[in-house]
Amino acid sequence: MNSKINKFVVLLPLFCTVICTIISPVAFAINVIPFSGTLDLTQKSSYTIKVTNPTDAETAVKMSVYKWTIDKQGNEIRTPSNDLILFPRQMLIAENSSRSVRISLREGVPPTFEKSYRIIVEQLPLKNKASKNSAKGASINVLTRYVTAFYVTPAKPASKIKVTKTSAIEQGFALDLKNIGNAHTHFIQPEMTIMQDKNVIIIDSLQALDAFARTNLLASGFRSYQWQIPEEYKQEIDFNKAYHVNLKWRCENCEHKIDQLDFTVQ
Image 1: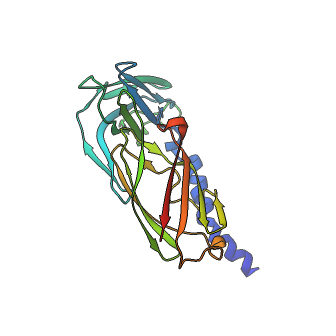
Image 2: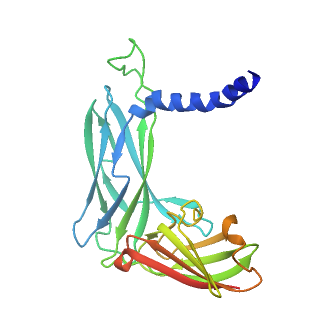
Image 3: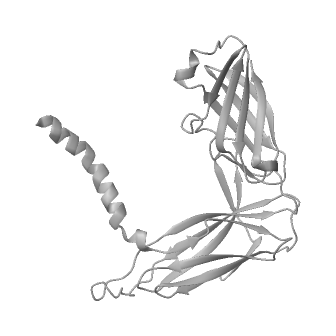
């Protein structure tokens, strides 16, 4: 009996978290479509996103623009920017309605290297605006914040990843990469093949390759990785000898939508 009670006590916070998430008013706040956008100035002069208010009360929205970079460790750096023109930047959205926001590049010409931004869409509280289904006098104080990705592409976007450094670490390797292309790339569905003598190991588990999966290497960006070979494969490798690695992935700005790297760990 005590065992059942203990299990219940352990699971109770998780249960409450799930329920609170389901019934939270935030779930009924604004929606932004799409979360990621690309403006190709060779095709059109502006890009449009849609902000929807599915609630039964008017809401206020404001938008901010940040230049977006990523450091070698994968940390995101945002710098306020005036590169983009957003119209409108602030707006009121009526109940159960949508508003379109037009985005354009102030310079108006395709860049040589892709420009990457974060467009942040924030819902602001409107005091003394009662919901039709709320008690009289109740005010809406629900805040929602969307952080979207936005790219302005060059005329011919193409990513190209280069290995700049490899070294052995305990039962794994350290790897430095640079995107020498002019557009970003994501590591989508990575697959790794490790070869040593006649031994070939294929690893396609997203969990095992989590360090690489969905990595975003922006144009001219650097990334550093440290990766250990999964426990179930360690006995198949002699870590006192060199081994060869092939890393393959799907990506959006690669030729044939596939890219790969070959390097030796020693």
